[in-house]
Image (cartoon, one colour):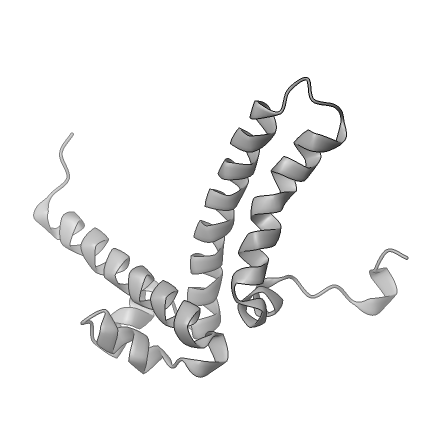
Length: 123
């Protein structure tokens, strides 16, 4: 069933916001970007941006989730391509894209990762 004009406009606006956030975070890191800059680049009002993500942290999570989904998909494909090459190769192939994703902008990766209280960390 085709979607209506209003839904298409919402999808387009969300994509502009996500693209702006992704690009600005890549250029300046999460701490070097304001939500106003993201809204301006996306050609959206700041109030409109807040309808899609209520904070800059939420925008970062949305952007990082997309990046990690792509990295995991790439890793799965690479791991499947190493079938029969031993036990370690598929694991490395699976993890490599995720590690590369984290290294693209280390500040964003640190801000994105969940905070685990010190007393519950594995030793």
